[in-house]
Length: 106
DNA sequence: AAACTGACTAATA
DNA sequence: CTATTAGCCAGTT
Image (tube, rainbow, N blue to C red; front, side, top):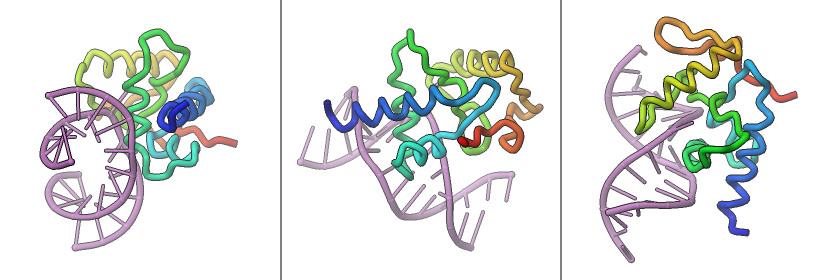
């Protein structure tokens, strides 16, 4: 088991704990798994996810409350759709109110 | 080995 | 609100 593999696993486990209808930021996940300032790794880990997985990756957004731009924009639309199905409302600017929806781990 | 890229963030001006 | 800077590191070229 390499370091990076276990990091990825921690990240995935943490993301799995985000409740339906709530969101978390990349930096928030990084801190929760004990890797502050490793926000990019969270993004990288999610990018590396297989197509069939049980990880609610759609609940992870950037610090501005936006869906982060991807190489393939079709997944951005998918992410937004999935979140809307969970009851998350996007504003005109395509942003989420973090104040309302951000996950606070108890 | 070195350079480049990327689903990022926080501090500062 | 925007721009700049520095921090971080796995993969790819």
